[in-house]
Length: 351
Ligand code: ADP
Ligand code: MG
Image (cartoon, rainbow, N blue to C red):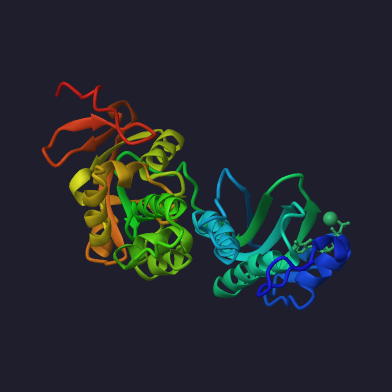
């Protein structure tokens, strides 16, 4: 079945389910000492001895979570692994294994799945996790990709969303908002392309934003960085939906309030420029954007000196008593109630 002279297209039906699984997984090796049995039996066998095991899963649906018109399959595979690894890191655990489940329609040739798998395998290598199983099946329409990540952590090192107290400081790794603006840029380029397919976009001014959207990284390094600083976070979550929504999760589960400082938000210079170009409010983007995959955590006030000058982390606020509510303190020093998506400018506080 050759539709394109330059590109091979091998139909999935010519391989069958087992042929396909074998093709995609035949040379996958395992490296983790906790993996006793990987792909090839009815189930994988893992042994974490006296460690805690953490498990997290995410499903990505074509047309809902990704758009293949600007997301290359290789990047999709990479990102699908990263978002799951990020959840393991948010428990302060070390990611060790993943399973990969895919449903595809016959619109996809074998070569497309090879692309997807090359991204998945690249991420597994970068993050040093074993691919220990999965499932492969057909779908009526489009692609569905579900990855489960497994990790290990010492009992005393586990960090939940619920551990913050009302005197803790709020800290975020890296910078935020860039992935969302990367998506805005890509969507604009897609529209330009639809009008004029010969238009070759110059995306250099947007390279960081696009990379944050198409090739996000999980903060696997944060566990070690904090250990070196001799800090154990009291509560932690990864920034997948957007900073304000993650802050609300931490506050709700820890039964505390929060004051977040607008002027402290860590923003990349490229984000600042492009928000101006798009005429978007940068604070809204930083608070509601999402897909940053940075880690948001709380630390004891006593740890302030240890972290304050560290370039990997920014103190962006502090927790308060629950009845104090959750607020953004603006540059003009007014307090505005935070909402899950951005903030509600109407319900400005009287104080
Ligand atoms: P079962 O019938 O028990 O579900 P399968 O034939 O679906 O077994 O899978 C055979 C082996 O291949 C299992 O170890 C399974 O975990 C693995 N596997 C299936 N699909 C994938 C995939 N997409 N990626 C990685 N491993 C897979
Ligand atoms: Mg199966």
